[in-house]
Amino acid sequence: MCGRTCLTLEPKELECCCKYRKATDGKPKTPRFRNEYNCGKKYQPSYNVAPTDVTPVLVSALHFDEAADSADRLLVPMMWGMVPRWHKGDFRKHGLTTNNCRLEGLAFSKLYGPPLASGQRCVILSEGFYEWQTVKPLKASERPAFYVHMPQADEKVKMSDKSTWNVDSGQFRLLRMAGLFDVWNDDNGDKLYSYTVITFETSGKFAEVHHRSPAILETEEQVADWLDYKRVPSARALNMLQPCHNLLWYRISNMVNNSRNKSDQCNKPVEDVKPAAGGSKIATPKSKLMQSWLIVKKRKLDEDEPKEDDTGKQAIKSEPESEPVEKKPKPEPDSS
Image (cartoon, rainbow, N blue to C red; front, side):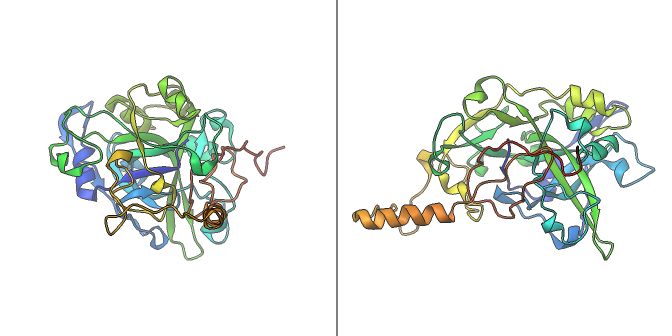
């Protein structure tokens, strides 16, 4: 499952990180950043990206230019949480949970099947994603949080310290997830591009953290096959999605639970998190009455992170405030 990500790079930096080579041309190419209005929603680099935020994703250039080669790529800002093309009214009120979609049964889904059949495949970019340990019976507010990322070729690179990154070299390795996107039009004809992250059952060591994980594209070949929908049909593209066994992760503080916390402390190892403003740590009330009141207050403020659903009948939350609470997906609204 994927409920929060981290992406702090500017568009020009992302272009450097996403250079690619086509099979027919050995020269490296840079995907152009194509800005979109997206009903007024803009990309803002963030240490705590939540559903309904906008982030750049990779797509085939053929989706925007009929004369383009399907192997060419564009960087396009899109909103996290797919809005179905058939939805009427306010895009924030479609009543569906579409942040993640399950690989199992994806091709037959009435919600995700049409975008898949239309070749609307995308690659979601991030520096890493956040996950909460749900395999142990703990309360939502007590679940340890982790920052998950790809290994870097240079061992000196620390994901929590941007001063160690060399983005311009093109060697910095982003975490790339397979997804689908759709295009929705409002009453004025303005377009909103939005995406969903594909997930499947976790295997390997990461299963100790969560039973589901995003479909990560480890190699450049996998990225090329996923994006080039003219060369690679949908059935073959889905079959190539495999669990990633090279993931790295470390424990972070639970400040990331609240999507309003955008501090650069969100992705730092828990032992490196700086004290609160003023240099002092958060004090624990000595009064039992006060402690009880704070616990009740915190429970009221905590909101569940978006639930993963491959059909989408549960209400979407615009600002999730805590780690995910697992629930079984409900049937599709128009299924029998």
